[in-house]
Amino acid sequence: MVRGMENLSCEESLRELRLFSLDKRRLRGDLLVSFQYLKGLVRKMRTNFLTGLFVIGQRIMVLN
Image (cartoon, rainbow, N blue to C red):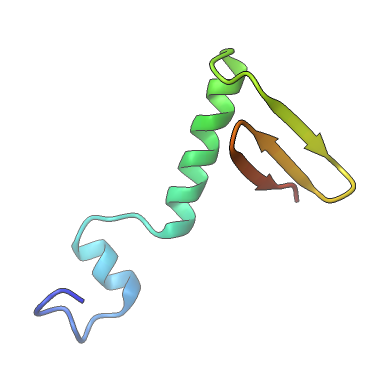
């Protein structure tokens, strides 16, 4: 908790501190890893459609 921001909601605190939500940070990370794979910077990629998991390197993404 940041002093002086006790009365703000989580979203308002993030906005005031100019930070992104966890969902947006995860999406950004997933997009970066996907770009790295497309550019050939990541060697391993596996997809398991039965479980809905998409693995690039060490990251695991859930397919929707």
